[in-house]
Length: 481
Image (cartoon, rainbow, N blue to C red; front, side, top):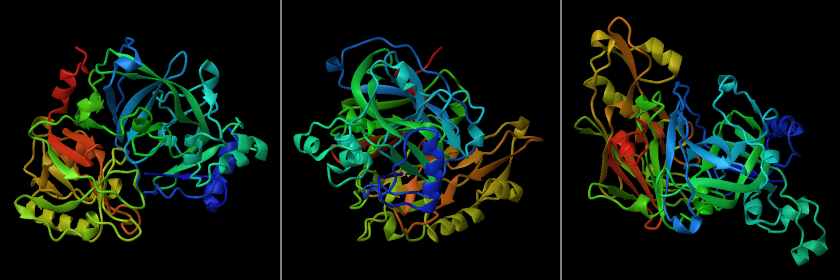
């Protein structure tokens, strides 16, 4: 999830980072925390996956298209959405993130800089946007609703005062000065700094071969980041989010994340639907209520009631995984931008204690120390091939009697290729760093593989249906022969 800043207070470390960042791009503006945002102490994983390429396009008028389907590409820690921005169009790949609102892209072919991003230094797949090469690009104005939102202002005049508008132009609503630069933070200190920009956005229509143009789309043009090397498409419920700007907040969206075993396959993508098609459900879809945090209303929460390991139901799940306190903390966030599911202590340790006596394989403690995962096991691999090992099943039980049996590859996953007929698989759950602030737990994207997830925003519910997402992709034309 994310936090935006405007003009008065911030921590010493953020000030230091912003001074470094903005001297290489735009002027510094930082300050008050958005009450509709929260910083999560979570980071994406470092397991290596690869990125495929976008497909061909044809043209169709905006008024003729009510639904959208977009291809998502699996990478090492999430799923990438391809954005085509500007005139002529520039292709940039960004993370799909249901845990934030702002859509931003790296800006500047040579000037874009990511601090503390050594893992990505040689990544040639990260596109950047050049506003000077787009004839339709312009800075958003200080009086726009998007500018006011990114600066978390309760007074619509604040941003234009900061931009240097005179009182007379404010009263006449004639000041057209650009929106001041912003800062926006993620996870364990991830930070981006840039300017709010508008340009043409091209998206797909109801098939991969139809496109539509969305004029004046508002996004962050980011020149410097800290630990955020790739842009992000925010899918929260705030005014800046991509679904909000495209008019889908009264409908919804859905995705079917391919298993990561397809990450090296350049010819297949995960389907992302938006509009009426996204929320039309089958008989096998189970819906759980969408909980609304009074403090963080822009994000998607569900209530966890129990976890079953094998045939044994877990110990009492803490109430804060399905309820909020008076400050709005609690609930389980469902987040496509967080890799692994996080559970609060001591519940997380209780789950580990349930699993251990059910698994007969020897522990791979050296891998546990190296990766930070808590349960890793050496498993037999005949002919150096992984099999579907007899690990106990894990079922998540959400509110409204929704039971989701996780595919085994969604929780015990191979850490590397097997050698000498032996491999290592680790449990890909993690402990929540601090469950007293913000969400008490997070349902991450790794546990959502091969599951159709429906965000029905009209009926305020989230649906789950186990599915072969590769077959779903093929049926939607997202597979190349």
